[in-house]
Length: 623
Image 1 (spheres, helix red, strand yellow):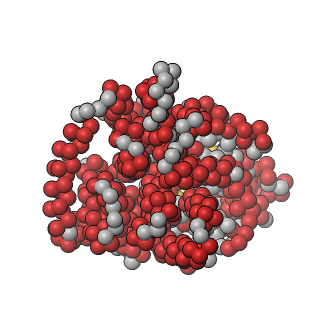
Image 2 (image 1 turned 60 degrees about the vertical axis):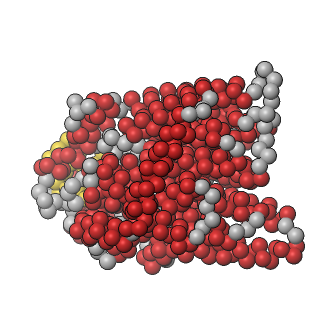
């Protein structure tokens, strides 16, 4: 059902996007470019449609059926006929393209690509257990479907983030189940690979384009993310596609392509704040180009860039305008010292900055020097970079010294990769945040696979063979990561969904008890509990990070009555506490008086109704 739902989403995106491409008359050079742009624009049309429905409380299945399954197909009949006709031609063409007249190494690369696609698809068939997915990527769409409204939650700072992709997840959840969100993110990974392939094919040839695309798609971090309901692959797709049309246009400005690039960049901003890093790297390219052009042309160039930025802001505006209206801060909760905003404070803002900066392995000169090596060999889901990228770039990037790209577009992209990387090192060093730089670097590696040297020691085939060896190692790493949670037991039906969640989420048994044993009108306050709210079917309150409000309440409490009144004012009937976490991070910061009051409150008003190791569920009584 999830696969059918995502297939319908892709089809609707294609017909909507194709109409926009035809109306705008973008000068696209190939059928693949047309497809990529149509998908980007079409997916955004559907996403924004869902967002605007959410503003009026109309996120209901009946409305989705009428709009997306009845109205849109009727309005786009011409595009539907054209799409079906081209699907037949494309399938016939691609079968010939991929299997005829290919070198032996290219055929090996195609086999590896197929194995990665299969592995990443299998990842999509597992229940979501990832931190951010359960906190907001899926949790918020779940709430939107319940209420009909797209509204942020004060206790969840992540609910104020731009949510272009989460609107697509809402589409999947309302028509099928959460596996659809995995498939949507998986699809964005394929779109990135196709974008890399398309651009390299323009400046080189098909086989070289295949290797460049596979270098990126084979990264363990890409395989990991392809089965998660995250947004990083979507951000990378919109960012790279924006660069696709922006960088060549720096040399010879075509206003239509510049507008297209601005629209795509605006869509990237509608996915994630991190697009600011992408914009920063693009700004460096603009300054380099500005220094090269004639003084008489600079005024015109500045005007074009100004109009470009205005269009970017207009496309992304709905999400940022919402934040301005609700919090007065377009980037809430970031830039708090500049914009301020409700439900947050300077202390938590500093704590959150410290939390994000903890990723990585230090900020000394030596740490920066060793960073590429450490990222290659010290990654992993539980590692300091939160994901693994493998050693492919560690091996191939130095070779660019000897095989420098001769294409101007590739040289700009190489500068972009370097600028993005160095800016990234000063922020939260999470590997998935580096994806746009890795994707552009994959494009630049085309020069290595087009190696002009004919000597026996180094030639095109020897470097491609090395790439195949490294890609095969990445496949091994991705396979190891995939096997950690024993997926085949679940995929083959030998393990139920509940058994899988119990085995992989330590807090799930307590949440399952809440779902099955507590009254419908109960409301649970969660303290020190992992990000598992997506699976809680009863009303609950959980701070997205730090348990700061709960800790502050205890710090300022003057009596048992005050604590009891605090819970009652929030309608809370139960509290689920990770006592080990509370003992380590909350209780030590309480003064003697407050700790005494809280202990007395626990004796008089907490009744244990569930205990599992360090997790305790208490019913709050009147004493």
